[in-house]
Image (cartoon, rainbow, N blue to C red; front, side, top):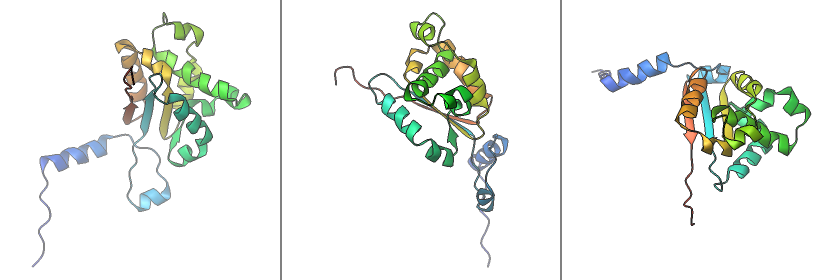
Length: 170
């Protein structure tokens, strides 16, 4: 007697349809041998002040190569100006100049750190996963969220937004 194949449920069909329709990155030959499909993923850390954003940013700077091994890059890595002035200040400012592209021009942060459209273009040149962490995202309004969603949906099949809430009086 043989075993019956598992009955396909609507959920299985839905999962398969999502996998088939998603945009995937160029997986390595090892991944193809294992039948691993890795979606292009954008991770955006909206670092509310006093929630460890600077630590996350400094760790991501220190471990750029490890992030790249996991398929994640930051848009300023492709920015020749950033590579020329590879200092902590320029690294943190690049994150701010990326994030301010999605907040209102009237915000004081946008005037202090103008949007750098080159960073948006460099972000689109990231082949696999995008990683961005910026405190400035805490100034984003609903229109900025729509612009950010349009930007991310144009290139990545999956987006993860990370926000940590810290009670004011803790």
